[in-house]
Image (cartoon, rainbow, N blue to C red):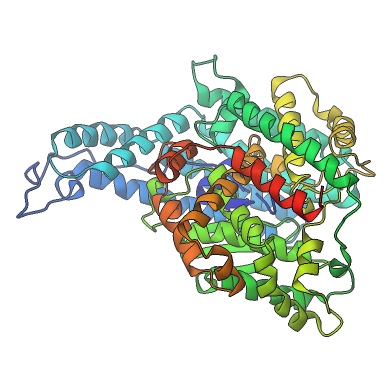
Length: 558
């Protein structure tokens, strides 16, 4: 899961295998009145003036947008500190909540300053007269206007209350999870859902025909209404359920012995760092820490931080979390550092595709383990005497379990669909918050075939709802489908894709992702638009279904 300044405003926020938050308007503060053009409103071959050169309104607007970006990045620093370093005492949580609420109020005030609208109107008028190249300028103004109008709908009091609640709810969630007691979190969770609905209702304005849940989805996956998600998820579920049943009935199951034993935490941390940096994470512009729930947070492209978690009786989950978050981080590190929304990530589904591309299509492949198994032996000593093929079989073992971020590739989609349906029912009023544990447990039994023994391993396992990130969960499966589609086309463009992985040569693969995804930021209107332009077709779950079917029928001989 990932959390950025943009995402942070929606989440304050998210996580691991399977990114925090949502965002937007880099608009801000008090401004001087728009001035007349100071230069001729044309660009010729001799002067090559840019639009920023000739429009003082546009220059003033950019200055304000960048100032708000910096304030949002401060929010990210506070959030990262809270989740990684800060004491968990109630007093500390309350103080941090007050700090974040105060900062959120300042950001909201600057983002909705009426001078912004004046500058936007004047810059739009200037742009209509400008004869030079204006593709990015048009998009910057469009994104700014969308964000401004969306933020303008939210009262400052509500924005501050949301920020304070996010800080308080995270602390309450941590304690309830530790105590394995949903009732400790129930009232606060209801407040989270109610506040998220209040924000979504304000954002949709007078257009009450837009369902609240679709409005919430818009924060994380613009242009992807619930009806389209239903179609995509339905196609995936229809293919995964019978495939999962065939795999579970197979008598030719790979051994998972390579995952079991005692693995020192410090050795796991060193191994994770070595592998993630080899893939392309730039540690000189980031850091790697440990947290309750793995996540990525970007303070800027030059400061992107990831966390994971480790346990001594199993080594793969900590490494998988690190690789997953490293994929998020590489996306953030390869965005341009303009401080403008055009150079932010496109959507959370797009973001998840980057983490899942590395975690699954690289990190779960046999060529990867031919490269990485010697590193495992170096980290864990001579007792780790497994072959690459045995490690590959172990990490791809299909075992229905309780925890989403630890789920195998076949069970993972069902974990996401469960959460998508549950949160949608709460938002639509067909499920009470108090009913979540029982409904969760029943759906886990029906969909994945496991009994949930306690709340900590059930409905309290994820951080998202405590961060008011309602509508975030579907992006994990959208990201899975997108990752498979990207991998399909990447292998076409890089015919020796698997050879490079086996040799530990990842630069060409990372460069391909940067070319197709990272460098574009938010220049496309949606994930579908990006994929259609870069790959030749919009999001198509067929590639995900084909990938799973081919891989697991071969591995399980079914």
